[in-house]
Structures are given as structure tokens and as C-alpha cells.
Length: 431
Image 1 (cartoon, rainbow, N blue to C red):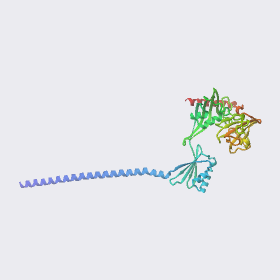
Image 2: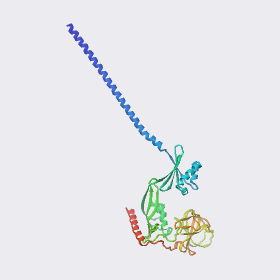
Image 3: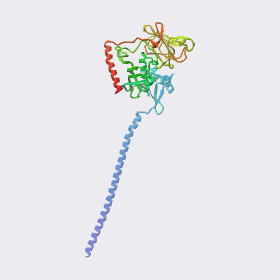
Image 4: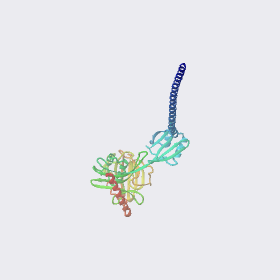
């Protein structure tokens, strides 16, 4: 009996020990697994952080490289004022004389700096240390000259992108051709060209009336990078006054000249212009009048056009300058000899166009001088005379012969082209 109790006691002890062993082993295993999962999680998180850091480095690296490769500049714009030269502008920017000489020499290898005009803009680009590293300016509407100022001076010619367009407009005059044109979004450049084109036929102070209809088609270019618009030739122009129409079409003649003709092939140009300036009003007519200064009745041998000082004056026709200089009460004066016994005279000028001198040949519409008030004058105006065989005649009543008349194959070619121009004009007006 006692032996059986001993066996039972032993079996109980063994069972209890096994149970304790299994229980402890289980706890140890769970702890190990838990710790292993924590370690794995930490490892994964560490990997994610490493990967994230690498990504951030990869993203940051190009930016750093970009900043190294492309230096940041601040652009400053300088307007060219009256009396400025490229040298004086560089001096004002504190360049040393040696550097100025180098910059000017490099530019003048490809461009004449005397062509830069008052009002144009020069851009200078400074780095973070206020050092000028680049100078840019427009050679023309389509081209930029860029001068890079590193250890060596490098010049680049940047050609801009140009898109060409044709536009048609039509409007009715209630005030004036010019002001109503502006209201109808017609460029002032085109309006000036219309006035010049019809100045052979019309006196814009007297002939233009309310309800006159103006219809035009013209070419222009847009520079993509700058948005600049450059207005080119008129292709078609029509003015209808009291039901009577004057119209002209652009045509390139066989000898290569751009000119304007009516449907019969007759040229717009006449031998002499009736009004040799734009936008002026008649302040005194041809004929007897009381002189505004002397007070005596005297023959007024020309027509006076009131206009602001500096308004350009055009040559009334092709010819040769036979007199330039002061001429008594006429003040600064020009006289041009034309063909067929005609002469034109221009008085009270403020100045002459550079290059105008005795013996110089000029073309019709070319600027020869500028409106002023020199000599016996009460205010800025142009006194304009037309002289035929040494006799003064009224410019406004002059019957002028026409210019070139197209014939033969040239006329046939013109008629084919004007029909296309007119059809395109109508299509754009009413599309």
C-alpha cells in the first residue's frame, strides 16, 4: 500500500513539474515572439525612415544643382532719356572705363549703338551680390541682343517667335477718322497710314463728314515672348463719303515696289501732296488776308497747317532740295524742286531732318523737317506753298496728275490679286 502511495506521489510531482515547465516555456515563447515582432517593426520603421531620407535627398539634390547651375538674377529696367548714350548709361552703372570699352566693342561687332532711340529700354540683371551679370536690349521688335558679363564678355542674338495675322475693320465716323478709329480698336499706326494713303485725294479737315464709312484690311505681327504687336502694310482701304467711294489695294509691282492702286489699276500717288503732315488743321487759307503780325492786307501765298511743335513734315513729292536755311520772315525754310515745273516750300520749321541739305534727293512722304514757329509766326504751324512755273497756286485746289497706271500682264495680275484681297476682307468682316 505504501509502495502505491509512493508511486502516486512521484507521478503527482512529475505532473506538477511538467505543468510548471510547459507554463514557463509558453510565457518565454510568447515574450520572445512579442519582442521579435517589436524588433521587426522597429527594423521596418528604420528602413522606412532610411528610404524616406534617401527620397528627400534625391528630391533636394536636383534643386541644389539647379541653384548652382542657374544663378538667380534681379532685372532692372533703364529707359533711355534725351541726351543719353550707351556709354553714359554704363558709367551711371559704375562700370570702369576699361570694361565699358570692352562691352561697347563687343556690341558694335554686330550692332550700331547709334540706332538706339530715346524711350527704348535697356535691361540689366544683377546677382545676389548686386553685380551686373547681363545686359539686354532690343535690336528690333523680333531680336534681343544679350550681353553676358562673366570673365569673358559673350554676346548672344536671341531671335523671338513671330506670328503673322491679317485683320479687317469697318466703322462709321461720328467725330473724326482718327478718334472713331481708336474707339473701334484700330491701331494709331494703321490710322496714320490711312491718312497718308488718302492724303493724295482728301483734305481731312474739309472732306471727311459725319457718317463717312471707313473699311480696312491690314497685316500685323505678334511677338510671342513679349506680346508686342508690329503693324505692317494696309492690304485694302476704302472711304465712302456721301455714297462716293475711294478704295485702294496693295500690290507689288513688277519692279518690286509696294504700291496702291484702284480697281482700274491707277496709282494712288499724285505728283504733289495736298497736305504734307498728319493730324493738322488748316489755320489760314490761300489768298488775301489781314496779316496777323503787320496788320496789313497781304496775299497769303500758301496754306497754314496748325500742329504741335516737332510734328514731322513730309516731302510733297519726289524731287531735289534746292534751299535749306533761314529765309527772312519764313524762318527755317526748305524748298524742293519737282518734275514738270513744280516746287514746294515749307516755312517756320523748328528743325530740319538730319541729312537734309541742298542737292539731296528726297522721296514723296519722306520726313524732311519738323513743325515750329521760327520767323514771323504767332504759334507753331507749317506754312506750305506749291509753286508752278514760278507762280504760287492754291494747294487745296490743285488738280494733280496721277502716278503709275498698270497695263498688260501686270494689270491682269493685279486684278487677280485684288479680287482675292477683297473676298478675304469681306469674309473676315462678316464671319
